[in-house]
Structures are given as structure tokens and as C-alpha cells.
Image 1 (cartoon, rainbow, N blue to C red):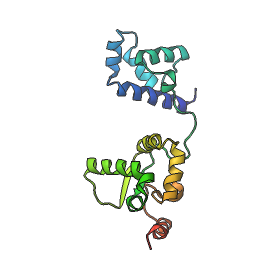
Image 2 (image 1 turned 90 degrees about the vertical axis):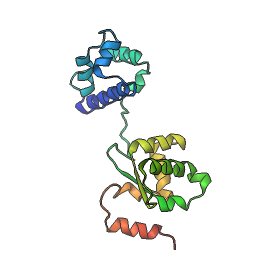
Image 3 (image 1 turned 180 degrees about the horizontal axis):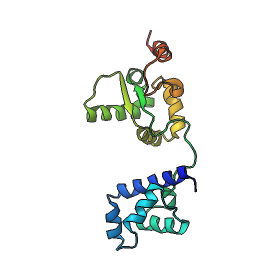
Image 4 (image 1 turned 120 degrees about the vertical axis):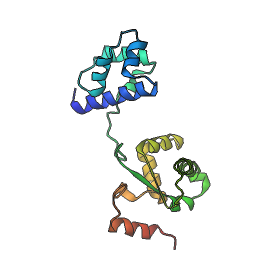
Length: 178
């Protein structure tokens, strides 16, 4: 098993455990010692290979399908978990509500939670993009393309999350209302 895959698998295992509100010791306690904290921790760090049989048993313990424990083998071409996604709220505001309504409501909810009402841009996480893709019934890649078409996201995601450069400023000028 490759190191990257082991780490990705471990991250999925950790995420599922955390979603269930369990610590490593909590897993050991809840399983009455069937799952030792040190073993589960080593699976989560990618230090120890987990067999298919043990993975299946762990899925049963967590009450999730085995597929939920497996990392997505396909690399996402749109966004990585460390990518900072910056939405252009001014462009979003000019879109028809029937198309952009869910995104606008999502953005306004995040603004309210953050008490951030600058109204120009809003940064969101890759996980937010995945949630939005579900709302729009499309893949994150498809939603990214749609957001670029709408002018809400910088084309090619160049400069997203990074410092503004001349290309970004030129794009902003092209997107500005005339």
C-alpha cells in the first residue's frame, strides 16, 4: 500500500471516528477492547496496514459502508483540501436567483456566522464546495466550471487564495460591470 494512500485511508478513518464523537480510547471502550486505541491510531496515521477483513469489521463497528472508509482514488482536478476558494460576491449578486439562489443563501449564511459583511469576496473551504456541489446535483469539478462561467470564481482557479497578481486584476476588470 502506498504511503499516500495509507495516509488518505487513515484520514478517512479518523474523520469517521471524529464524526461519531469518539476518541481513540472511546473506540476501545465502546468495542469492549475489540479495537485497541493504539491499533486504530496506527491505522489512522498510516503507520500500519489494515487488511480488507479488518477494514470491513471496522466499517461494521462504525455502522458505515466500507466505501465510506476508503479515500477517493481519483484526484480532483478542481480543488484540493488546502485550496482557498474565493467567491466574487459582487458577481454573485448580479446573477438570477433561480440559478445562483442556493449559492447566495450559502454565502450569506457563512457571512452571518463570521460576521463578515464586506460584500466583495468570501473565502470558503473545499468541503463547502463539495456541499454546494451536492445542492446543485453536480460534481465539484462541474460546479467549479459553472462558478467560473458565472464569474463568481477566477478562471482556472489561478490566484485563488494567493496574492492578487496582474492577471487577476485584469480578470477583475473584465468581470466588472460596464
